[in-house]
Amino acid sequence: MPKTGYSCRPFPTYLFLEVIVASEYNALTNGQKEKLKMILSCGTVDMMVGSLVRADIFTLFPEGTETYDNLIYLLAPTSPL
Image (tube, rainbow, N blue to C red; front, top):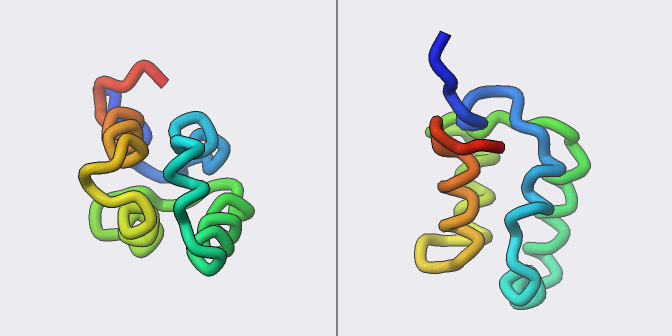
């Protein structure tokens, strides 16, 4: 069976903590931080392309941020994580 990375379900939310850049987290509004806390509290989430959680995470950390790049790497099928 080929390795599919973490783009499949379930995705362990603790891995987000490994890749979120502190300065980008600090730049989030209080409402955005609450949304992130809610996602992290789930324990596991669906990070398949098209999922609502994936869309929410990439809204908080859009393309052009270091966290976005880290997440893309983490979700890649070839990710060592």
